[in-house]
Length: 120
Image (tube, rainbow, N blue to C red; front, side):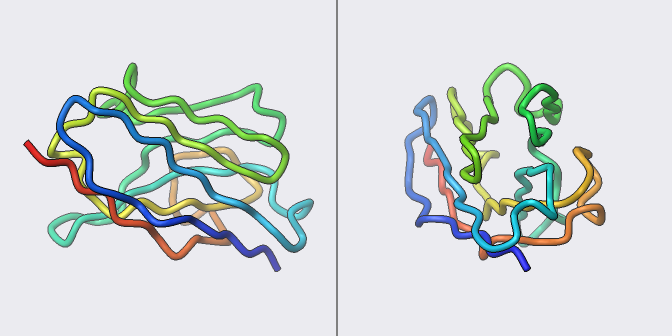
């Protein structure tokens, strides 16, 4: 089992920056890749970014490319987002799984989610 813990989110003004973190514990060796997804009440959970175990491969959704950076330090996952927009408002989830992919079904473990609100 892998447990993923995410600290609380926050309220940010448009144009600002935010860094998410997610700490993995438990059998982290069984889940190599990690990713970030987000969801709003009006939309299905959508891919944001993913990173391989070694950190050598990263993928980004077009909606955040150029504004987001995913990174990891051993079992802690980070997502830094700059130039935040109101449409970035969502609950952000971290996930862990065997494949570095944008498919949410490929991830076995999920954090509890953290709300991020971007005000205009």
